[in-house]
Image (tube, rainbow, N blue to C red; front, top):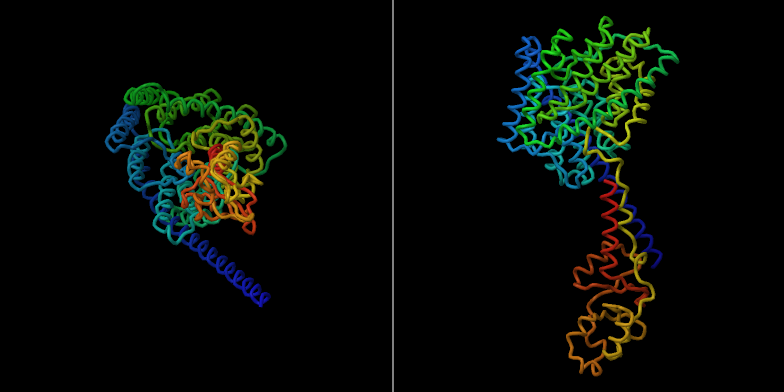
Length: 564
């Protein structure tokens, strides 16, 4: 009979495991299907944003210098008014995704999205030096976050941030026509030295769907066609390392400068005035130096301008300074947009300078790998930088020198980043620690109280051992708990006349040595006691108090917070 029961239990356990596996598979398939839907929705939304905002930016670039000077300044002023009227809490776009990813219950709301998208549209459409990927990433991650909220009962709890990451990947994939870049950037950007977990396949599905949706509406031409050729030699590889080191140093300084711009010790309107005045000043400088408004917008035009061999090293250095200043003034003035393309532009300019210095025979190699190095260093996303080079320029043959340059840039970047919400690495998996068996923290061989003992001797025993609680036993078998506070409620002159088992709490069940700390803590809260006996076949082998559990939970929370 016993053998039959054991066999039945094993069969039932096997069926339960199989059912659980099938349920997880269904949830995963649902996540992939939902991710494709998120990708399509994101692709449509990003295409709409790109066309709506890109059109006025193209018109602005053809206007007289007085217009290109005033419009970005007016844009910053308008954004400030909108920020106050719409009660935008901050100017974060990409950082809003990074911040929400790390918060334990972090979500992105549609109400916050439309306010930030409106401010981003004004910032970008008026020609301030930010990128379209910030609002695009925010669109996708917000869609993912909200879809997860609506499907909470059908999607596994661990998939909450997975759908947010998938949406972020879809946003970047669409705006850059670069699905692999979108996936890698969304996975890399939350951490400086790690990647988001569990989100790879859903992100691939969302990014692919978003890319297809976007290019159906806009075409498949590369974002930044380089026109270069792929072969390179050892000199090119060595030069790529040098470019990477220079880009890393400059990206580090740029991150410090932008952080300082966002935290100027002035009131908001003073900061807006500083930003607006700076953008007005840069307009005539850019027109005089470059004969083009290269201070405006994400400035793909600036990358093309820098690639022209007729422009001197001095002019390229001036372009780098003007673009850096434009981004700084935009950040100081509270503009909303991404830093991805500003970093790409600066990397391309540095690469063009190096190409002139060494008279490189391979056209566009160093500007291309400069992009990978500066972008990879600025956002601590080296893989995304390399992928972007391959996809956005149409030159996958440049991956090897780009990889070397991006690696070199990481060496000198330190802990700096253009995103203040990044964390160094994923927190450790504390789930096993939160399931520690109670015997790991109990006080073994606890002092027990005999049921027949009078209260005077009980008090003496408990006070001498500094115990607030103690197990009560009869014939070496556990029967209940006694608390020093229970004894205090009885007049002292009666202590010698009362037995321990008369006031012991006989309705407090013991726990097993293998029970985990969460189960024991819940049992103690329900019983309203500050301790519990640990038994083996009803013989007391230890005792654990609420203080013991509290100390463990405090330690686990501290480890969790430090890792985050």
